[in-house]
Length: 90
Ligand SMILES: [Zn+2]
Image 1 (cartoon, protein in one colour):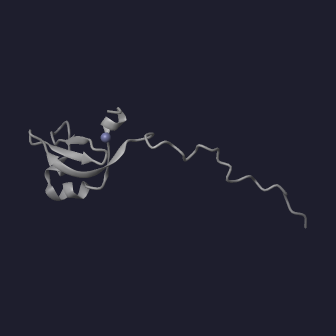
Image 2 (cartoon, rainbow, N blue to C red; image 1 turned 45 degrees about the vertical axis):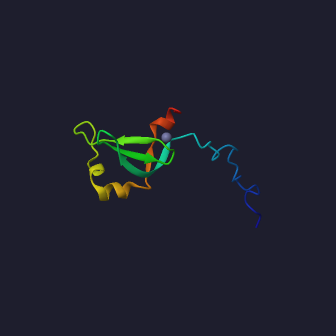
């Protein structure tokens, strides 16, 4: 019995460059390394890039009730958060 279709379909021919996106590309996700309160009493998430990001619970505009809770804040440490400062390259 002859081998049908001698030419196997080409595989693993992804063009070079795919999967090699630069680190600064895509979303600027940083890791939350901790929290502190600023002088106004607002919570600031400390990000792995060194930036801080205010997390305010001011309904109905900003809803972040978790930030007021010690345990819920601790839960967020180590999770990812977009850093708009890095996105703007500041
Ligand atoms: Zn940043």
